Image (cartoon, rainbow, N blue to C red; front, side):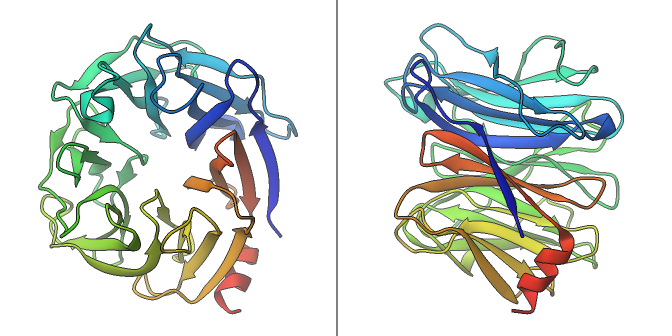
Amino acid sequence: MPKSTLIFAGNQERPSSHCASITELPGGELYAVWYAGTHEGHVDVAIVASRLGAGATEWSSIEVLVQKPGQPGGNPVVWFDGAGKLYHFYNVIVDPERKWDAARFYLDTSTDGGRTWEGERLFDEEEGMMVRHRPVRLSTGRVLLPAYDEKPWEGLCYISDDNGATWRRSGRMVSESGCIQPAIIERDDGSLHAIVRPHAQGRAWECDSVDQGETWTACVPSRLKNPNAGADMIRLQSGEVIACFNDSPTKRTPLTIAVSLDEGRTWAGRHDLETEDERFSYPTLMQADDGTVHLVYTYKRVGIMHTQMSPEWLREVAVK
């Protein structure tokens, strides 16, 4: 069964938390980031981080990574590239009156697991370009960073063919009502499949690419419900695809895990992780080297929850 632990429960200084990301560092240490402050978009919102050492049972006290006076932070994403470098992508709202339309997109990197940083740099000069999910390394070696343009509500990717040294934009993901925050997997035939958050409540959008993310098909309704909220999807080492999302057209509850045995075409089984009439949102999934699946998500818009699941348990979900 899944095992859950609060990474951060909120406090008087930072009563609201949201939008967590997680990655595994060398030696099995886990590293999580999110944004926290008075509320989303408030001028005191900072991007913070916490660690869970290999074999440890408690996450460390939070560390502030980014806090710019009068400019709220948001949507941090961490990714360890497997070659010694930790990437931290994030957004900063430069004009709180314009909210996310005025977000600037930054990148910082570290070669010592986030203990020191090389110095932030602007990742894209255009305001409103945002990130939500960690990069995906394709079988060809290409790296895709799922992203979106907040202004027209369109998804896209940043593409790197030189292990993250340079990046360029892909074609857009477009739907009838607008779509952002794509989560992407690669299928056995080399094609890509994405689920994308809708602007209207109801169902997630989905689309595909047959040219390694250069272009994307028009979005169509997915089998997965979505109340205009973030969702995530990854492919496991064993080939199954799992998604975490709100299985409701209108509410950010329940928070549900679904398992697919056919690369995200259909969903074989589901399990509700949270069922209270509360807000459980913005899940991020990651599979560690030992096979354990880790999930972080916003817990009641106050704290950040960490849940661990075994591949064996997920296979049981698939055949329920």
